[in-house]
Every structure is written in structure tokens, then in C-alpha cells.
Length: 361
Image 1 (spheres, rainbow, N blue to C red):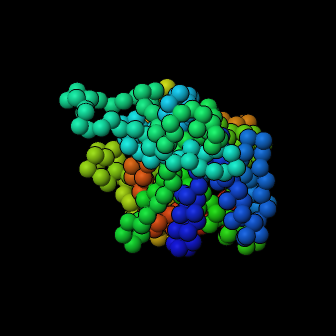
Image 2 (image 1 turned 90 degrees about the vertical axis):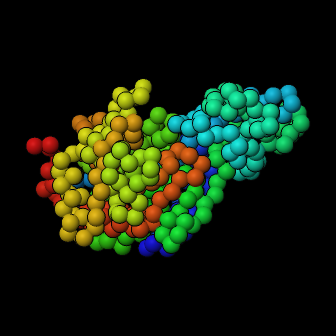
Image 3 (image 1 turned 180 degrees about the horizontal axis):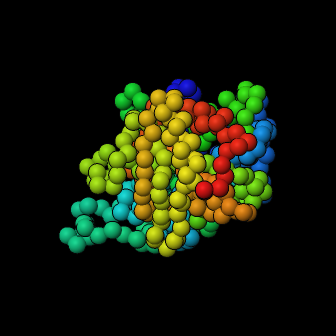
């Protein structure tokens, strides 16, 4: 399982997929599902959905396949490209980053977010974070006409240059681990669900536009009307010197479960998980001898925040994997945590029987 997850995650990290431009990621995931023999379909917004009929209550198990990045807002006469942020891009880490601009027919053009030559930087500038409107991309063009000639237009998607590399025996660093790792886990779950003979109805959803204010999963939930929603995403790892006071979540020590999330920065939303689902995952982890870490964070938000409000309300919980350096160009995860997360989900699903308590009482 670990090597399958490594392969799937590495494959998916290599594909650009800005919010609203997930086509290539969706096609790659669909191809992997096809190879397993699993039918899937896409809705109007772009969510990829695979359903496994069974008993009630029904479960929507989902993760997002998009990533954050930029949109080109202007092409300067001298060929430099101006950007607008899409999603929670950390501006302090942008100068000198390599990016790709995706143009027609799946072609990618490389560029760099310019960083003023150090020898010409004033003392004040050395400690100043430039805002995105003040940055520009150098993609090798001498004029706007050259940029237009290769297909670059206003509105073109831009992401960190894709790539990944191993770190030690079990860890991977790469682009968009948030949330291509969740996609890899969902593909692993699909392999097992394709072979099962009973259990609850499960809808696997690879959602779109999560980084653009949590858009896609809500549409899928409105169509599927699940009783239970289980969302897979990163959990903030707190095992680095700058994160020690934020919690107790460590790479390599197992999957995580969120007990509290609240964004608190413009989007006043979050999730207080359903107690029956908390008990489900705690008891399953205990029975399967899987270490289950716990998270409670402000500043974190997933699309479950809106899915939980669909219809008469959906019993909901966020589970996931520890990850370092969220939203940066190179994030880090531990494949053993993805294995544990996959096993936890697959062991928990059969425990969702027709008498599973959906009321918070």
C-alpha cells in the first residue's frame, strides 16, 4: 500500500491544477479509477464522483484535487507578467519561486517570480515583504507580443512549478501535497471498495475549487444528499521549531482527527465534528491498533464547513494526515501516515450500519 500511495501521490503532484482549472488532474484520477474498473462521472462544476451502492446511511467521502496559485491579471508591454493571488498564497515566500503558466492544449511555460538583485537592494528592502500586485513573473519574453504568441492571456492559471522528491525512507516533499495526498488515499480506498460485498453506500468525491472559497464539494453534496460526510485533508504538523505551541501533531505518528476548526479570518466558519463519528474513528483506531492524533486549530477551514449545512444537516468530521509547510511551494508528508489513514477509513466504513446514530444525542 505504501508504494502504491507513493506512486499515485508522485504522479498527481506532477500535474498543475489551479482552482477552476483542474481538468488535467481530473483526467489523471479518472484514468486511475478506470484502470481499477471503477465508473465515475463529472458534474457541471467539475467534481469527479464514483459511487458504491450499499445500505443506509449513505456516506460522502471526499477530498479536493485543486491547488492554490495565481491568475495572470496583466501582460506588460515588455513581456513581464503581473499576478493576482488565488487562495491562501504566502506572499513572504514568493520571490524567486519557479512557476508554470498553463496555456492551451495542456502546455506549460516556466517562469520565475522576480527577486530584485541583492546587490541593488536597500537595507529597508531586505526586510520588506512585497505584496502580490508588486511582483512580476519573468518568463523570458521581451514583449507582450511574444507572450501572446505562445498562448499566454489574461486569466491564465499559474502555479508553483510541480515537482517532488523523497526525504528519507518514508517522507515526500512536493507541490500540492494539499491535497493530492488526500486524492491518493481516496484512490486507495476505491481499490478496496471495488472488491467489497457489503457495507454502507459510499460516494467518493474528488472536489474542485476548495482553495477558491470552498466551492465544489457543496454542489456534490447537494446532488448526493449524504447522511454522513467524511472529509480528508491535511492536519497542521506541529513538530517543527516554529509550530510547537500550536498542538501535538507529528509526522510519522499516524493519521489525525479534527475536534475543532475555525477560520476566523474573514470566513467565520468551521466544524465541530459529530460525536458519533468521533467515537467511530476513536474506537476503530483502537481496534485496529492505529495511532490517531488529535487536532484543534484556529485559522484552518475545509469545505466540510459548508457541506455539513446541506439539506437537513449532514453528520460530519474532518480526518487527515499531518503535513508541514502548508501552502508553500514544497510541502512535506510521511507516507506511513497516508497508509494509516487509508486503513483507518477502510476499517471504519463497515462499522457504519443501518442503526448508526445520526442525531447528536
